[in-house]
Length: 391
Image (cartoon, rainbow, N blue to C red; front, side, top):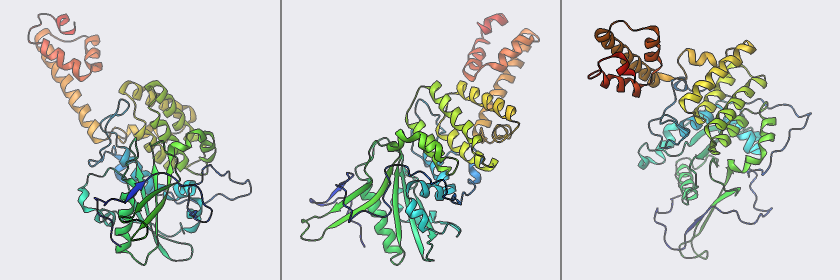
C-alpha cells in the first residue's frame, strides 16, 4: 500500500478540520468530548503501570530532542523525552482516559512489546532528529488476536499542516510490513488549540471519479481539556494519566514563574493524597518536575518546601531523590564540581595575598555564583586590599 509522494499533485489535500458528525461513519475509537464519570458501583480498572526507564534517574535529557528552551525552562528540559517515558509507563491509563472503548478491547494482562527499532525503520530519512515522541507497541486483544498500536504525540505550539499526511505515511509503511495485523493508530496534540476529534488526509489527484483516498484518524487535543481540570483532579486517584494531562496543561499556560511554582507545588502535593505507593508517586513527580521547570531561585524554594512537607508527613518519597543525586543528574553534578573548584582556587589565591579569610568572607565565597567568582578573580590582579575584591 504505497504512500503518496511527498510532493502531492494538484487535487490532493490534507486537512485538520472535522466534518459534520455522521453517526454512520463514527469510529468506535473516537475521542469523547467530555469526561464520563465513573459509576459508584463500577470497579476500578487494574492499570498496567510500568516502571520508568532507568535513565530517568539521571536527569532525562535526550540529545535528539528539538524542543527549544523558553523563559521557564532550562536547556536541559526535554518535553519529548518526558512524554516518551510517560507513555511507556502509563500506556494503559492513557488509553482508558482518552479512548476507553479501545482500552477495553486490549488484554492489558499480556506483556506489551515496544517496537522502537521497528518504528525508526518506518522513516529512516529522519536521521535521529525526532520532533515527535511516537510509540509503536504490539499488544494482544481480548479476543486473543495480536494488534499494533501506533501512537503519535505532537508537542509544538501549532499543529503542522502536514501532520495528518505524516500519520498516513506511517500507517502505509506499517501496513506494508504487517499486512495481516490490525493497526490501531491515533494521536495526542499537546499544545495546539484545535478541537477536531479526527484528522483527515484526502488524496485525489484527478478527482474522486478516479483514484482517491480518504484517511481519517482519531486525535485528542489536550488544550480542549483545559476547562475540565476539576474533573481531571477527580479522576486522578483512579487514573494516574490524568496527572500527566494536568501537568501538561499547567506547562502550556506559560504563567509567571511564581504562578508556575504554585501550580507545580500543588500538583506534587496532590500526589500524596491518592493513596499511591512511593514508586508511582516518584513516576509522576519525575514528569511534573521535567516539564514544569523553574528558575534556579524558585527551584530551590520548591525543593525546600517539598522537604518540609515530607518531614511533616513523616515520608521521604521525593525529597530523598535529590539527596541521592537523581534530580540534579550527572551534568548538574559536574557543574557543581566546577563551581566548588573555582571557589576553592580563589580562596587559596586570596589567602596567599591577604592572609587567612574571616568566616564572613568564606561564606561570601560559598554563596557566590560562577559569574561573581570570575569577576572577583579578575579583580585579584589589581586589587590592593581584600575589600577591593568584594566591591
